Image 1 (cartoon, rainbow, N blue to C red):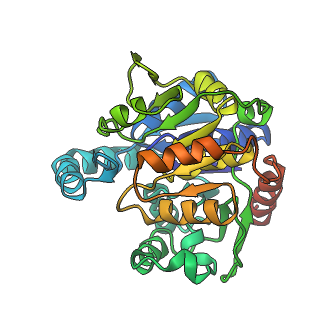
Image 2 (image 1 turned 30 degrees about the vertical axis):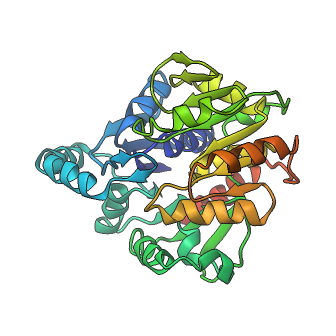
Length: 346
């Protein structure tokens, strides 16, 4: 089949997991056109540069600005509005270039590919972790936050009317809507090959580069911290700032005593798979991360916290077990369900 695959570009989690699915689809003999924005474009373009039966095109997507551990809503709006004219032109150009005529569309929470499928009456398969907010039932202790209804409404209108919704998740709430299947988190081959060997350092990950206040907090604690997300290499006492390195990150993750990070799903899914306890501090204004972190804590895989609190982090790291009770799974279940969905379309 000829497939149009849309990947949202904010953060690298969507790109790394899409890489796994795209590799599988190419192995199955499909031909792909990938549309992607942000840093994810460079990653996927480089990854598949020498592969046959695939092209990767850049489109314009929304960008989030950060202040500390929060989404800077006002600045995000201003920056995106400022880029709107060129973004529209870029996406129109991408639309004109797309002489691909796909048989179906797969969207990882990406709107451009979804609307292309809608406008051309092509079946769309949604593949992401976000739809769990709208398409599943959740207990009151998970949805008590007043932002839940707002987040649910936003997710509901993001990709309405898809042929099927595949939702990646490490927790299994009851499904409340038809055409919905829950599958385990999508894991990179390097994560599947990694083996847990707990060390003495703590892995820290930040989505944005603006949370400089976190560094002195970590310096006041007695452990070694390896901090990713600041996009530079630097040693600051017991805190090592690490620039992006996929191999280095995985090595530091599998050997970490614990993880301190936001509530993003991709890293959380990898930490849960490797049974590394995680202290999760969701970004302010990102309810999906709050949902992830609450389930993480409820299932005993880590702790949900509203802030980076020195004493709370110290207590968590001090008492962190060497492994959690999660039973690791590979990508076979996802691939089986995805193959079945595509076969029903052909």
